[in-house]
Image (cartoon, rainbow, N blue to C red):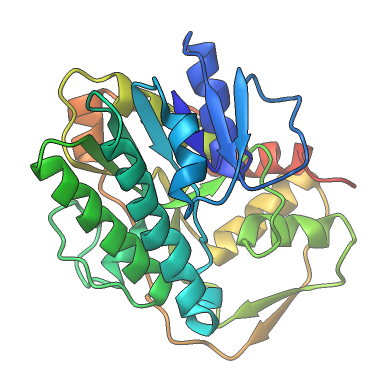
Length: 298
């Protein structure tokens, strides 16, 4: 099995899950630094947009977990071209490379809940019409559509995982709310700046639970085309309270003016539970915070 973006936060968890299940895992990454902690049999370094770099990494594989991407929605507003080149262009390069090889590999694509935009109906199920609100979501949706086109031509088997917010072990990116609040608890920042009153709700899922969804999608006899992956809705204020509860440390908050954003984005995971037997096992809010806290240098 090949994992693209194997050295990323979610990619590394997927590598570990696949290896623990007995798969030989190959990694494709743009990062030069080694990751001896990951159980990969072979490593290819390259740009996901480079078909020539991808072809040797794909030779002989039966499945691909495609996670290589740019993933920051707010940043995509300032850098739309980069997100389109990597997210859509990377999918095109991957599929072109696979087209030149024998067999029909299964591609499990790490898409995003951002493809839905801000639908009024909650929770969000897979039948919700996509309406991305930024270039990140739009580029991921276009990559989904390209993958489905190739699957319709019988070139690949396609499974799309529309993932909500990954958290938990190894979550140290302070662009995300849980690591940001933990950084304040650890004393690296004096306060947490919060837009609005903190009532905005988002859906969080432990990275290990998310990685299991990739494993199940790869191994399922007849998986469906698209699944949501989410677990625990929580408001920003609930996250701050959990951080204070788990760490035993205060998290001072400064409220900034509210920004235009959906008040609630919560996943309906009925389909993946029914068809793949997936269940979150480590995604309570306190578990998410505690595992991220153990990953934080303090």
